[in-house]
Image (cartoon, rainbow, N blue to C red):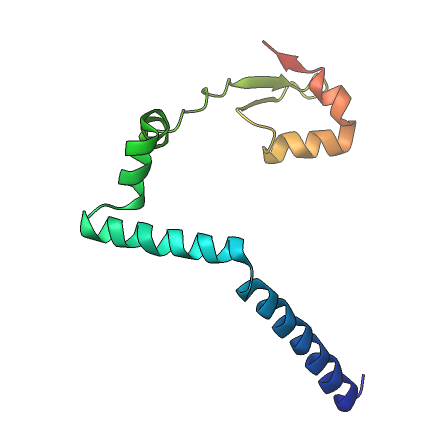
Amino acid sequence: MSRLAEFRAAEKALKEQLAQLDALKNDAGLKKEIEFEEKLQGLMKTYDKNLRDIIAILDPGKAKTSAAAPKQRRARVVKVYVNPHTGEQIQTKGGNHRGLKAWKQQYGAQTVDSWLRH
């Protein structure tokens, strides 16, 4: 694209965005939202409150759940794989073990999964 065509495309996009901005400026709903936000910010400043305080006042149940510690995952179980060809044993908590990956590549994932001992 030539520099002139690029300039004209950018100019056209700018005109479209300015028209959209003018339409938003005249939107009554947006004006009400802006007014509400300004009044709310003023009240928060007057009473020295932040957004978390407002949420705690309006919805106490939600404030408690968001402040609580996140649930911990269940501990992973150690899995033991025994290679019947070599007798070699691998213990892992996940599937990202280097030796286990090598076995799966050499023998196939289904075959190696059948070597799992409980």
